[in-house]
Image (tube, rainbow, N blue to C red):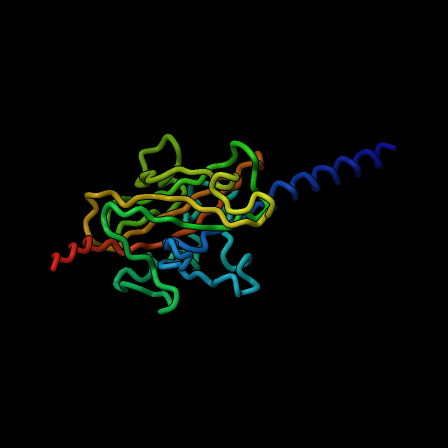
Length: 222
């Protein structure tokens, strides 16, 4: 009887843990145009045409480990490895260009986590300095004077920011604005989603770059 009860409890615990760790998501587009076309992608984005994108691109930080890399090693940390290269993505998957004061709309899929009311939040972090990067979770940890500055906070997935409430994998969006006083240059950003339904801590990140350029001057009237 005791063995059976122990087995049942263990099975329940494993099932509960499994359900808590099924969360996963990543950014598909950093700059979505009104037409729906993507004009800027996250670092080393493999596209959803790649059947292994979940394995390749999902990056989980568990246990709220402040020593953990903030960007997925070998996949999204290329900013650190290629500081002298302005762009290291394929020509058809460029980084976004944006000007100071511009608001960008980014998108990702809900992946089964669409909720009808208040849910989890996404924060966009950056350093605010060209070629300065966030390396570990410590740089954005709450209560620490790290390098990370929160640029925007928005819902991960609810009917207000997702296209189809009846689709568990619907596309969701969030907006953030490049501060007006940002100097032209190459900037690193981090999309941080603390799912945290798992008591030990469950967080997902996507890292991306934006080339901030001078705002185009309006054409003189003829």
